Image (cartoon, rainbow, N blue to C red; front, side):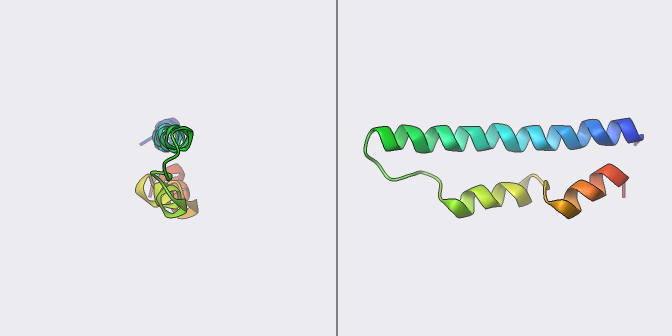
Length: 66
């Protein structure tokens, strides 16, 4: 991939993680409003980083095209 393609791909990974993150936050807020416990705990939020490869090594790998 070209450098530009790597940037677009990496932005896509970040966007996927952001969309899922916002959905998780919304689900937790909705449950809070009706007096239920959160659907997602801290570990679920941390798991987004690995699942979407948006940790340091994942981002470097994508940006450098390894």
